[in-house]
Image (tube, rainbow, N blue to C red; front, side, top):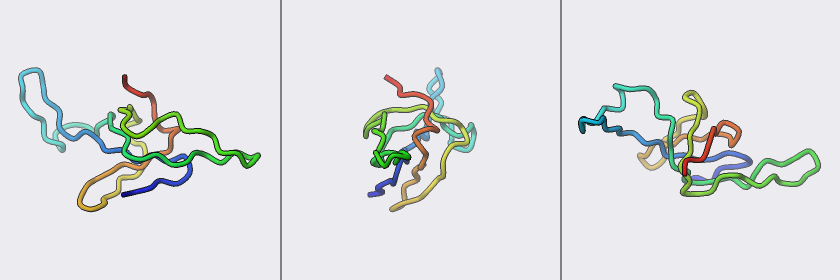
Length: 93
């Protein structure tokens, strides 16, 4: 599995979305998703004093992120998004 470094987070974006009428929208028929599940979390950002800042998210959290955040990567045939923790907008409860 991917192990992010520093303050990076690996996300699995939600690809399918159903409308109220039950129609499933294809991934290319809508904007890039802005919600995802956290798959892996790095150890945290190293501060100027050498200490490591704790991460605010953990594996399994559902998060919101900016539409153009991060880098898309493919690993073992699955697509993931790698973002810095600062690019995450919120944790969805």
